Image (cartoon, rainbow, N blue to C red):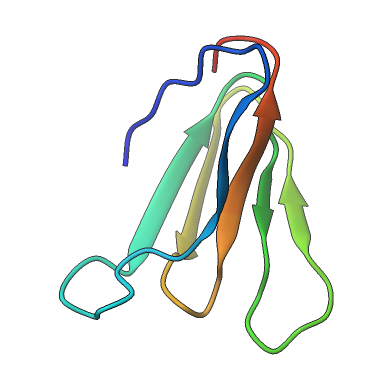
Length: 77
């Protein structure tokens, strides 16, 4: 997925990709501006937050193993 968030609190609610198992289950995310990526690993009580840093490239399984969200962004990202 490639997305542009305009700021002003825009984000993406917690979800999984490919819930019906007919396609994608691997995701990459290049983050440059506001909006922390939060991953909720399956079977774990903790979360993993990834701050948007210049030149960061993140690969993760984006299916049911790792529900994820983009927290509100207050600048274009």
